[in-house]
Image (cartoon, rainbow, N blue to C red; front, side, top):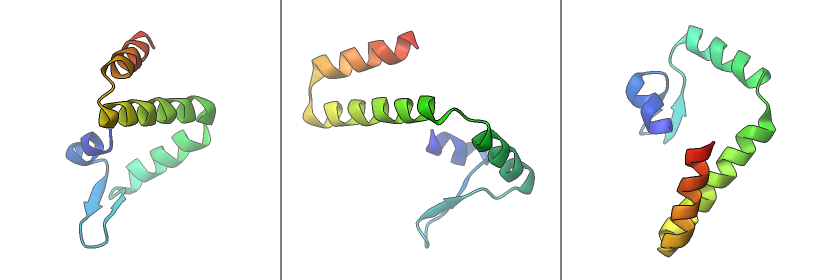
Length: 75
């Protein structure tokens, strides 16, 4: 997701500092508003699913990867 946001120009990446930032004031304000109104439980669940999928991929656990992708697809 972060790579997509960088490619679309919503997020910039400073290679020297190794950090991302929002280069546009309007986008930064929209992001602040979205963060304030976000249900963090859903965000945390999505991040946890992403972590599980990454770990299963690294372990080469094809059954766990397939199950995770099926779960994500149904959301």
